[in-house]
Image (tube, rainbow, N blue to C red):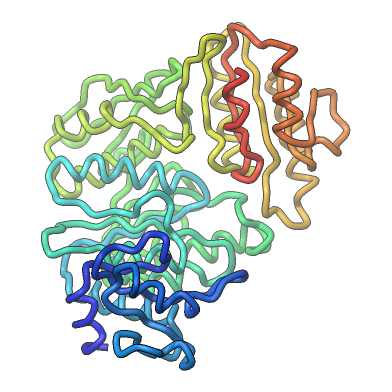
Length: 427
């Protein structure tokens, strides 16, 4: 590994896609369901790669093409070896909802004082995490690694690569039920992050108001919490209002913040702000810098974005959806004061045997909250409800082109595959 690590250090970085080769990079040939990266090794060198790593001998046709037993395992072991060259805080973050937003807010706060490295986008799986770690440079002072899971022991695998010494679980909810077999499976899998931090004798931040998460915090770690009103917490926050943007205040011993106006909607994001504040306080970021980071942060990638069109005001939250995040979004949406509110909801994916019952629960929640709604996707469309529904977003768009919606506050929420953002142009 040390010999291979020196090759990595001599390269400009790591690449796994010949369409994005950087000059003098190290190309690692991964395999997928419909491709074999080994077949692209020679092409990678031709378009600029310095070395290529393959795991099938027939493709070792050049002195700059090196053979390993398993290219994916090599990528992960290389990332671990690189991570061990650093003694900086490595913050692991996982949870059913809010991982990416939480990570972005934490990074915004910590960047006020430190050279902070963090997961780009949501590259949070067994390939994205090692690629993120391999971008660590000597000038970085803190890194935040987002970790996702859709089956048992995924978080354990990522922690074995990352060896986090700080950690946070945003929440435990109904996500990836098909692979994790229910909420108990989600809890068991997410807890693997806490177990890894405990093993490293590290530090955990948790939401004291979340009885599920706070109930699995190991007492042997160094623990700090955030909450609305728990005096034992590191920081306490107050939700001042939803306009529809979150407005909040927070306090720590001897300090109380002014009211902070943010650019994120939804009561569920209130705790994401508190988590970012807690990490800022823990790492001695000046209070004013924390406040400025929160008020300056603007979401992207269709996550809790407010977008004004010529016709309506949209809350675009259609990057992903599961029963927990859908319920939180709708409950928060119902609390916003507006005369004409419409929820446009897409199917929730990866729910396995719970698929029908979970979608039925959302329909019942809409009725309970007295919300007008339009439902999109094969699951919703096949269900018996009083709400207007369409099998796909294309059919929705045909409807919207003739039935114009005006002067409404509209939330768009659904799983990535439904692509509700395609309806924005008709709203």
